[in-house]
Length: 251
Image (tube, rainbow, N blue to C red; front, side, top):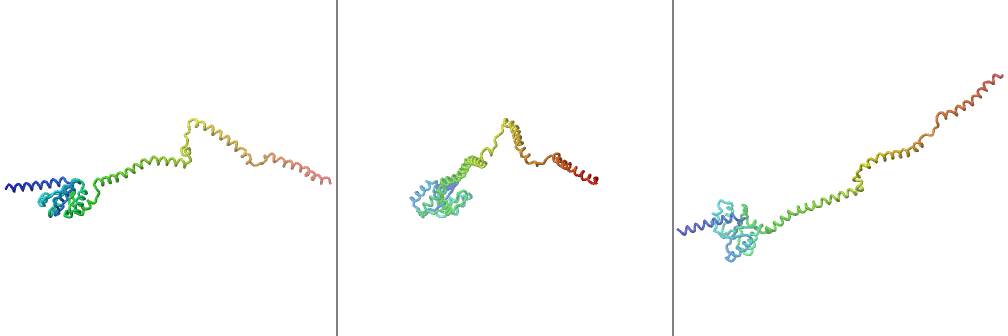
């Protein structure tokens, strides 16, 4: 009776341990270890421990009891034959890579599948994860991808004032200089002097135009002076008319 109670207590402890370990792990992977020696199992535990994996052997019945009705229940389909659980405490790709590398040198280790973030992973899924770069490398690549656009934006913002200055300089050169682009401001003294300068300019223009106007006028004599020669001619012809009138009277 005492032995049975002890066995029952041990089973309860194992079930609680499986629940606790699965709840604390980021992922759990099921593998079959049939044919592996004690030395090979020790080597496997050492390789997994270096990357954040903990390899533990449990009875399938106790594991099923632990995952029954919980989020890890889908793992039950992989629990056949001598099975062990690998609890992942870090990068799942690194743990999957350690399992794959060990299975290549020790074919007795068979990776069946796992569960991560509520998603069931097949052996092919774990193999794909094993091919990924380490987590640190992926984070470095992500940081580089995020920093690249920011660096380009900083370069554009830095070059913006320079480009604006070049544009303004080119516009000034195209317009022929600063004086043509922006007229020189007129001071109050210059504004008062402008009317006098305008009057002098008007007088100069009038003097220049006067000779041209006299040259353009028609060269015609005044009307009284033109009529005087004609009157003289009439007076000269008048005595001849009188002489012609007096001749018949002499006969």
